[in-house]
Image 1 (spheres, rainbow, N blue to C red):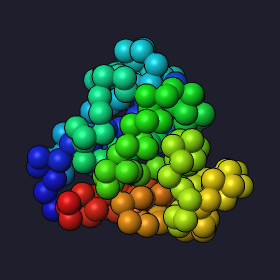
Image 2 (cartoon, rainbow, N blue to C red; image 1 turned 30 degrees about the vertical axis):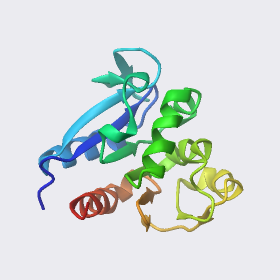
Image 3 (tube, rainbow, N blue to C red; image 1 turned 180 degrees about the vertical axis):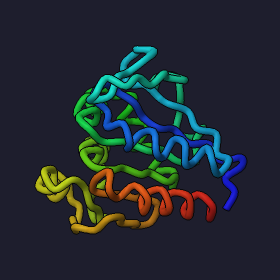
Image 4 (cartoon, rainbow, N blue to C red; image 1 turned 60 degrees about the vertical axis):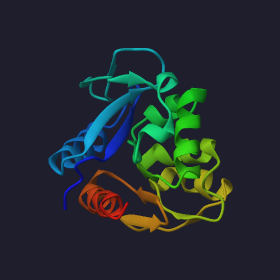
Length: 174
């Protein structure tokens, strides 16, 4: 499948989970998508839980959901910081409202909850935030990947192959 012409935002903040950012980043680029790293709070570089840096292409305040075909939210502890930035939450909310692919893995469900997009949706996450997902209105299940319309969720790094396949498939249909 070719994703040439597709534009994807991958969100970044400090304490991101390395594999959950870099695996989708390179997998989507491999398919031909233009991938931009979108920062939350003005820094040019964010560091992962283990100190691995990611350079930001643009800040959330400077972009709009209309510019992208998909938004990918990696996990780690970064989602707890991401949801503190109104522009980042707005980007996820608007992408969902516009029917764009919104993909979240692990603790990234926190951003979905803050964006108010889980009500009535089937979704998964890291088990520790199951209650948060349910309280935000999701029908939570323990599966490696859950696709409900344009919303794609996964639980943990082990699920990255299924997560990336689901994103590529969803984007290839748009």
